[in-house]
Image (cartoon, rainbow, N blue to C red; front, side, top):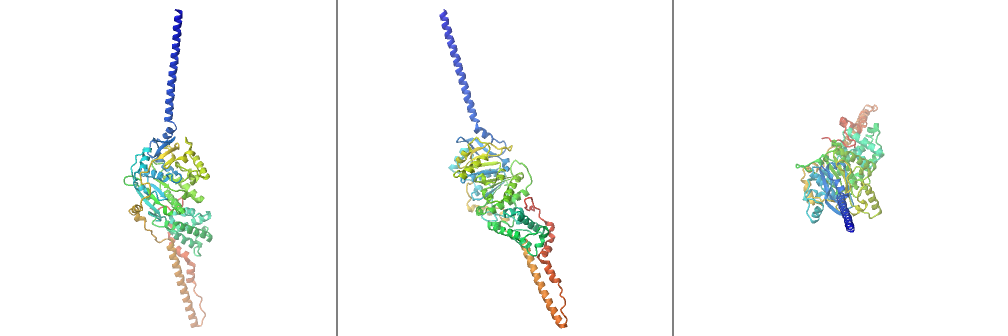
Length: 565
């Protein structure tokens, strides 16, 4: 019995130990399964999930594309940009051929659909197709499938403009008076003393009611103020030296060679035209066609400065809106900043910083962020960075500098930025609370409008059929400073000639009378000659326009004339 009992007990003990072992194994298996599930969950909400969560906005937003992670496109992880943050400015950058233009087209057409007017500076001439529906194709269909896009060919309502009628488009012009001395001195690259002298010239023209419509008006006023008749005009407030006047006139000559003659004149373009929406609530896309002046960056820079300054002057302060009043896109932004003076850059920086509160957003489109000055770049809260190349040491340096401008990222950005394909980009924008979103590699959606230039015949038809064509097409050269000064000069010369003839006749008559009477010639009356000499052009101008003193033009902080509406 004892042995049997012992054997039974031993068997039972072994069985218990086996059961314990089995239960332990089972528990280990459960723990392992739980750990695996936890790992799967962590993967599901891992880096890709956390990045996508940063773009889950509650308000209206533009759809940029789908997240790229670990070599795969994740169509259920959408990358977006809040509509309300578009007035915080942005940058679209990347090497040639990486898809920058298509990106701005994608954003612009969604803005238009959302009721936001858009301005596009089309340097290369390949953005005009935004007003026409896109053309379906295998590549477009494949891109739509990749990013879960419901693609439908759609064109935007648009207007086409040109600088002063150079190239196709409704001519855009400004008067010299409206442009003002501050901006003009910056684009002429005048020094501080010369800028102050130009300010005195404008002050004189403003107070005397001499309208400076085009550059010949400004030339006429400068020439008059350094003439013998006009020197006294500015003597009490500093005067204008002949040397400074010569510098200004030479700078104007160089500026005219850039095409500025066509840009300055009337009818002056009303920048409120850029704020229009259609009857169905879509924003009008205004396309400034610049292929004909892409080799004239100074002219383009002039237009940009005047346009932004004019908008800033006229628009009221609105603070933060649920959507911008207007969004600008300036393609090939390096043309804007190339060779720019320090004063020019300071003006652009100030304008970009202040115009946000007027509800206007500005996007610069260029090859690398280093094309944009640091002070301007610091104002750009939304970034879409396409691929960069590192073929040269300078390229590699630019790549490293670009990486440093992004927030901390889960990606190896230095490697990623050289590996992105066409139509792919690294994105970070401002969230609805104003904080930067996580850096997201993105396969971008395809624009739904035509990805290419509008046929020339269609472009010309769109321009000529616009109701704005009849308003701005034909230049007007009404009487202004040049004509008034020329007329006064002619009148002064005529009066001088008449006085001289009358004086000569008086002398002859006096001589004849003296011969007849035998007496010496009487002392001639100098009053008529002295009147002519004493009046001069200045006194003639003073009589003709002295009544205009109360019409001095009011100018903004940028020196532009406030529009009279």
